Length: 382
Image (cartoon, rainbow, N blue to C red; front, side, top):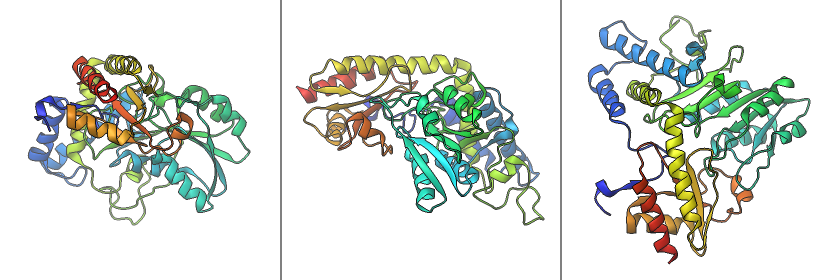
């Protein structure tokens, strides 16, 4: 492989890289200088750790459109957060609506509950670019429908769902919307609190530019998931019952303080530059890559220009896994191939046999990265 300085990393939809310098500095400071558990003691480092957690919570609340920080829990990961929301809100006999464009982080727990006989599940189709018609939510609604669970943006095509329209339909019928914002928060400005959903989950390590080990779970006031995990919280420790406060109920266990410090620093980096400006810069790169890839013989692009900065494509005559391997070995262009943990969307994209090659552009990518990707793909097809 070529030296690391020529590495073209285009897998930001999985984990953003490289991180801003401020993020790594904050992680290092917390790991080396703080090194204590948040909310468990009164000595200086423990107090510092708790302050880091409060900064992360406040930053998440701002990014979510100015929601109440006391309604923001900070689980260890987005998959955990989504499981906490889904398992914590469904009741036996509920009917739940999901979509074919969703990630397995929501589809698998829902399928698990369906097979256990706890819920009935309806999965709505999407179009050939991963978009779901809000009218299909109305058509699928039943008297027992309680939840609509969906990904805000497809991690395969980048397509954004019309969350305000879908939420309006659900709310008019007394239902709730759980939103997986893994591919939108940090790229798409949150102009309406919680994107108009009732519950939002997002990981720190993707477009929020933090590290793994932290995530966001926000629930609007009145939405109270039953705790999926029970244990120590540092509060009401003389009782065997979980505390009543929202955050304490949902944050059992020891938080990853360096990850929270990194997330707080990354949020500051995003806020200073503006989420809209950062997202638009990434989308410009993705749109340029998509347009130039469409000019390559035998390349079919499966992505949109106005969503997450993701470009999925196939190359006629080549398996996506082989294309990805050649791109790295020949040009040090690093992309992802396969189904991208999205089990159902490929049936609608026409890629159900092998999936796609996926390139995703972060705020530290450049026009040179686009040029390297297109040149490498052109070399494959020629």
